[in-house]
Image (cartoon, rainbow, N blue to C red):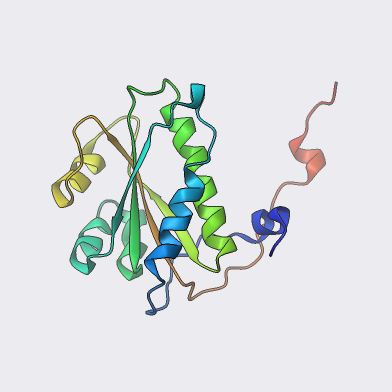
Length: 169
């Protein structure tokens, strides 16, 4: 079992996937990890749709230019939020999706999220709604590709601790 800090440090956005399809239980476990995320007043505004239909995945990959990689994913998890449940639903979803990404990496899966939500336009959300049935009260946050990685991105360059921490009181 990997140390959580090692998982955090070695996780990368994976946009190329092997043809081998992971067991659906692994995808369910990733979503279960997301359910443990913190949320404002424990509101848990998240909902998820698992897409494994190749034609629907191909259509979802055209939601915006940076989601083209989804076409090669064996699974796409569509992340949804109910804004009525939390006044911090975007932050809540960020926490949930990060836990999903970390759990995927810990299981030997690769994942990458493609943003669908845009603060100035619902065009991408409406596009996704035309492909899959989504309750009207939910916002479409992201489409996340998940599968066995078929690439090994280089180590991530990050700011030095002293660059990131500007004051200590």
